[in-house]
Length: 135
Image (cartoon, rainbow, N blue to C red; front, side, top):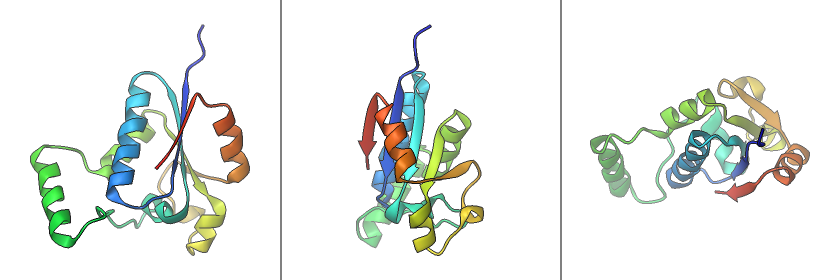
């Protein structure tokens, strides 16, 4: 039996563009049978908490409003649904412990199925992966 390919993604950017593109790549990999690991660090950590605010596109208010309208019009899922779908399909989510503490948060603030992970775990998982991407 052939070993499943593995994708590891590091998400450190908190913009809607970065999160959306990272989730599309993760979901695509899951759909073709890959294992997927998502490491969340830096500014992206608050996006994976229970009280997360919707991420904004890195543009002004009117552009953000227009893009959200277009997403709804084109029936493109919002990122919260993409994250939940990816987790349901088997994506593992690891949140950087130090970044979590710096943000004034703890493991109980994280979304369901997110785990704590640090630099050593990232290096181990990334070294065993077929593809590593950063957003």
